[in-house]
View 1: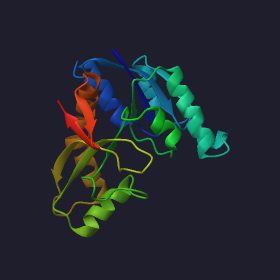
View 2: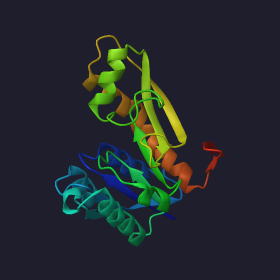
View 3: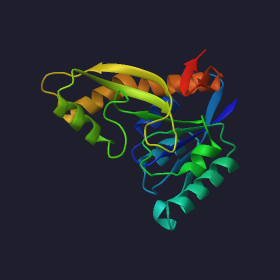
Amino acid sequence: MKNICVLVSGGGTNLQALIDAEERGEIKGGRITCVIASRADAYALQRAEKHGIKTRVLVRKDYADVAAYSKAMADALTEEQADLVVYAGFMTILDEQVCNAFLNRMINVHPALIPSFCGKGFYGLHVHEAALAKGVKVSGATVHFVTAECDAGPIILQKAVEVQQGDTPETLQKRIMEQAEWKILPEAVSLFCQDRISVENGIAVIK
């Protein structure tokens, strides 16, 4: 059984999707053993505690710089014996210390179809604002491995979502969460825990 550590910064809707999927028996071969928040007031911590999941808080401003914070996070994940690290609305930058220590063992869900609307500055509603400004007819979500370069790791799963006439960033965000993020994130976690994902020449292959 693989240990899954989830990193959070806010409300934790993606964490809730993972908890619900685990409780429905949809995450095969793994269980959420720890939730680590970058903010002490993150509501995601309450979600974890309600389901009896261990929590930790590592506040970014308690550390001098990104390197010190990243080292503390890598140490915490090692202590927790994390087999898989999942970014679930984790808004704090970590450096290559963490990515290298957990190479192809960290995954993130991004609310667009990478390589569109991704990279530095594309987070939260900014992603959907950019998609609507471009007039795209389809957007969606991508689950990918985390590397030191933002949103550039091997793509594991993607799911498209229709953009509707009159969408606002908020309505598009909600639809993408409900129809894509909350479905493909647990699916990717389950595939990883079953050892069904390999990375070959920089491309994620599902067995």
